[in-house]
Image 1 (cartoon, rainbow, N blue to C red):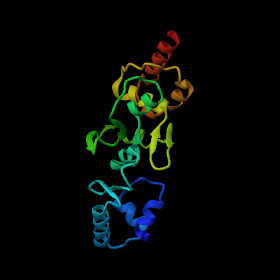
Image 2 (image 1 turned 90 degrees about the vertical axis):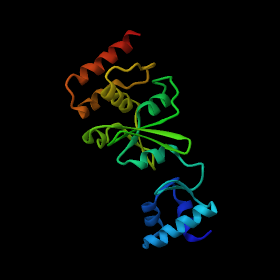
Image 3 (image 1 turned 135 degrees about the vertical axis):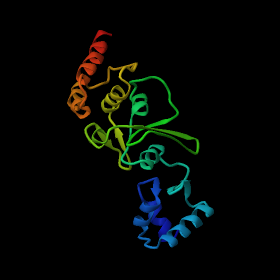
Image 4 (image 1 turned 120 degrees about the vertical axis):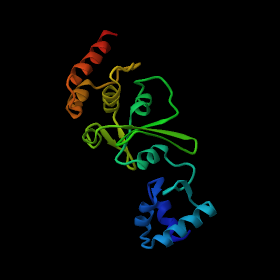
Length: 191
């Protein structure tokens, strides 16, 4: 395996932008980079996911791709809440907090971007670094859902850390937001 591919395959990332590949391989020539990427896509050594995005193979991390297309971004909303057992509905789509609202398809994957205000989006409270992408904690995903949708039915609030929620409430800078979270907390304790 040549050093160009070797550097890509040795990386912990499964998804790369053209720019990341250029930095990783220290390829300075844009034309040379395009030619190499085109060649390796044709030979099947790397996979082109969409313009400017590549993967080592079909076993790439879908969350990594979703969080990388529109940055800054983090995996959140229903994706995290379903994984954490807060909601029981299954969603095939990957839900991402971002600076814009958009729906995309990449291969068989549907990605739903939901816009959050910039000062909320870039605040790191309740955001977990997964190494190659960022993901909301269940509490942050819960708060983001309440912030965007107001009334939302959550199947299971038993695993929510209410103390962590109330520590993050100031991020949202919305009147009555704390009262709204207290209402959800009361519903939980009433169960």
